[in-house]
Length: 519
Image (cartoon, rainbow, N blue to C red):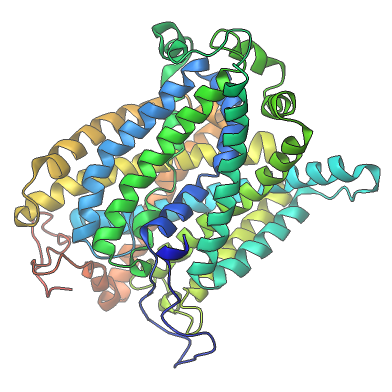
């Protein structure tokens, strides 16, 4: 990873001007660094530990197929997304691309939707971290351990993430890279040992999890939703655009590598794990202890030492995940600060070259959400976490649909930018069709995702994406009337070198474009 990074644009200790007010982020992140940060956001070990629960409520051993199917859906989307990253030179990802094609108010609505979904998922993971770390401390130290409420440990994680997020992105990249490698290492050790020892009573079979009976043994649709969810956060490849080295090449490569690695790794990891019980026996084994089956398997096949290491890394995995979300959120706020949110969010630290003001605001919002959850008295495991993950999943699918539509509209308006039909028409059209089906499945399976049968809770959570979009549209409308010069900044999304800036459509004529200077 070290070969992919260089020092920050400014030397430590160097100070210039007013804390970098209104500056553009800069950096030299390479493909590997961006891939590490995005994959760490998925918390690989946490997903691996949760996979037995996922397979129990979906389609059993067919979870291997689900992870591959989710990767294929994301790869179809990635074809158009990667091309869009080249021609829209702004680090807002979904928000920037939708603004460039569907209009400024719709784009801001998408930006609020993306940011809101990350805040939701981050708060759920903070809560789950607090619960998990308290259990780990009590397990390791027994009666002498302090039995703290979950929110105390959640505040510890928030403090660590806030400190790292305030500093240079290279520091976060190194921390996340180490965490990711350690998580992958323990999974590989467990899976390799299972295979070396010949698996369980059914032996090793390369195809048993891919049979028709295995794939359709339960809810295939819910399983594919789980397969898609492992890619949550992948659009961060474009969020870090301003801090990437040669972004027109680095970002598209990072997009494809991230999608390919995530789907393939989780599929292989679960295939190898299932060999310990066999395709026919995995559901029965998991049903006896869904939350602890992976630890029990690790102790049986490798030993208690690796189990203890895995328990510790499961907790650090959540910190890595929240740090990734924090970095993504800070850059979303930094980007929105150039138009509809307070301009001070665009400040860049003169020493750390980080969006330090946006980072502090991100920490503040996370703190308020933690306080809010604490005051409600909701359970971090059975209520807060699944509720927030359900909202985040719904928001993610909506954003995929909106961005796919934007890709088609953008390149139909600017056909000279890309002549190939696959990335600008065929793949986004397929992505729209696939994700509309998935969105229907999310609505149908929402009570399973949220873990509650309460109609009030489920309808409230389902309404959250609409509320976020509406908040963005209303904010953009108010800014247009009160600060039109700032609203006009939403058109500043850039184009490829040598191409005409396509501009966002006007509010009165959606088909019109506003040519502007080359970025």
